[in-house]
Amino acid sequence: MTVAPSEFDTFCRFAFAFLEERGIRTLVVGGLAVIVVGEPRMTADADAVVFVSPSEAESLIHQAAEAGFELSEETERRRLEETGTIRFRKGRFQIDLITASLPFEETAYRRASFHALFGIRLRFPSPEDLILFKILAGRDKDILDATGVARRHAGRLDVASLFRVETEIGGTRHCPNFSASGLSTSWSPTWPITSSLSPPCFLAFS
Image (tube, one colour):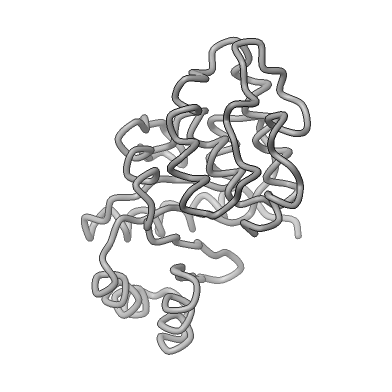
């Protein structure tokens, strides 16, 4: 699909303004975060972690419908219950919102920094946290994105912070293959991301 940048920009400004106006703490992840923090690539959708309670998430669905997003409230409530995510569309574009459920996500929010995109200031994860978000997502393109982030920030990554979340994420996701112990100060950003991460582990997160 060919997308005029102004169309997507307009959608993103509308979507993120909708969240900001309602005081929703938001952390941009997905392709937009890769553009800002990693190696730029094309994307035509938006993804963000939102820090809301279950009742606040349900209320947000109703507010989104009233604000002009195209959605079925019943479908989104079911999606929320089954996956912890909600999706708001407007025209050709959509934003996927992941409701925060891990201590790691709260920590990533606190470590995040603001960057200007679409003429607005948005909060993006640190390179280290974006790598971890991508590893958790686990698809092939996510691993490529994580590799790109590592390559862009080679020699500047805080490997110790990756060590610190090893138990948190590995234990929560029940993935015995996840271990930051494969990292070192001379870590090379090539597949696999660490010597102890294997494709079966990545696929378990998708």
